[in-house]
Image 1 (cartoon, rainbow, N blue to C red):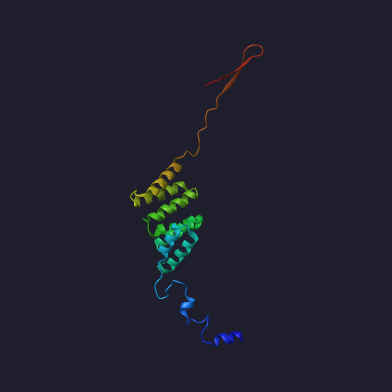
Image 2 (image 1 turned 90 degrees about the horizontal axis):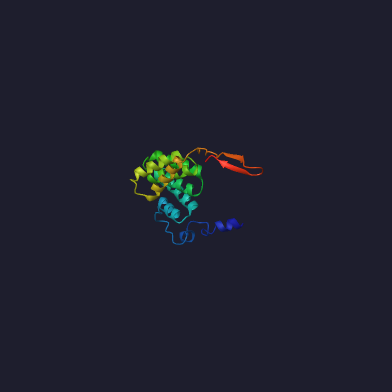
Length: 179
C-alpha cells in the first residue's frame, strides 16, 4: 500500500522531476565535467593516490587507454605500492609512446624497487635522453641505478693475517704477524 501511495503522487524523492533536489550542491548537471586526467594529477599532488586512481580510470573511459592514461594509472599504482600492476601498466605506456619521459622514469623506479637494477638503468637512460637531461630527479635516479649496477657482486676476500706464536724463554710467548 505504501509503495502504491508513493508512486501515485507523480513526484517525490524517487522521481526525476525535481533536478535541484537530486543534484549535489554546486554542480550544474548541464555542464561538462573536468577532465579525469587533470583531476587525477591534482589528487596525486595532494597525496590522494586512491582517489587519483579512480579519476584516472574515469579518464580511461573517456579517452581510452592512451599512453598518458596508462602512465598515470601506473604512477598511481606505484604510489600505492602495487608494483606488479604499476610495472605492467608502465610497460604498456612505453610501448604506446617510447619517448614518454614520465612513463620511462616511473618504470625505472618500479624496476629499482623490485631489484632489477640493470633494466632500471636502461629505462632511466632512455628517460634522461628523451628529457635532454633537464630534470634533476631523473639524473639522480640514473646515478643511483648506475651505482647499483656497478657495485661489486662478489667482494674479493681479504687476506687473513697469519700469526705465529713463538716461545721466548721458559714462560714467555710472543705473537708475530706476517704483515
